[in-house]
Amino acid sequence: MPTSLTELFSPACHLCPRRCGAARDEGAHGVCGANDTLKVARAALHMWEEPPISGEAGSGTIFFSGCSLKCIYCQNHEIARGGGVELTVPKLREVMLRLRDTGVHNISLVTASHFVRPIAEALSSLQLGVPVVWNSSGYESVEMLKMLEGLVQIYMPDFKYSLPSPAARYSDAPDYPEVASAAILEMFRQVGVYRMDEDDVLRSGVLIRHLILPGQLQNTRGVIDWMAEHFPMGGVLFSLMAQYTPMPGAAERFPELGRPVTAAEAQEMYGYLLARGIEDGYWQEPDASGEDMIPAFDGTGLD
Picture 1 (cartoon, rainbow, N blue to C red):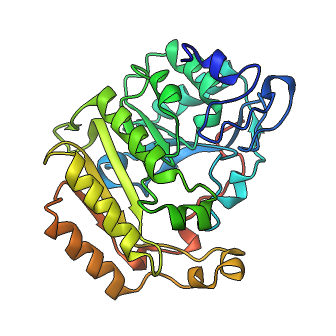
Picture 2 (picture 1 turned 180 degrees about the vertical axis):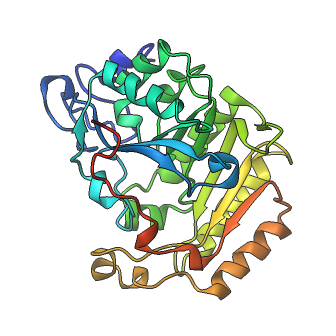
């Protein structure tokens, strides 16, 4: 059992569940697209998250480049495959503090698992005074997450798939359901039941997201069932999202992904959510979709 991030990373990278074994500390790129150089695509105020994350003041959001999952329908596909601005650990600390000083409710780290070593180093010497949000795909190893205990106050994972078949088809990760289940339970073990402040802004806890995919309602039912079976009322927050946006290239490979989620599909899933007794959370309508909701990954906030 690894006892440090260094053991998970070097000489062969096993940080994520793909365990690709790349010699990233020698310059090789892993499945995530990264070597050992920290890269960030954007660091700025973000107002488009769930209400307890964005609140009135917004979330100070840092988008990291690369991803170990690379879903075919990813809205952030531009950076999931690399690019971005190279940062040192001191510069990352500076970026976090600069965002904090704008008055944001939290510092949100998006798709950061493959850079957990420099991020943990940066956080271990910071007193931010606002919660750190770990905004992830949910496809993370328990061993890696254990190294974040005490550094992260809010976990905001996706739970994309309850079924191996769509996980394999769209993300080449048939083990996603079991991996994400274990990861989310570890997150909950670390931070416990969610806690809001007097303005209904989240201070600690787990907020689980699920995006309804067109035609994949049984997958969504499975996610909702898992939530209902594993967490008591008041344990975690859940965000059910219907704003799937067809992305370039996805429909060419998988024609069923070439359309938005219909209002009827969304309503059926909202009804199922309530029928299973899940009331701690949020849902987003299909009309919230669109490429205009995707931020510019142009190095904003990194100069």
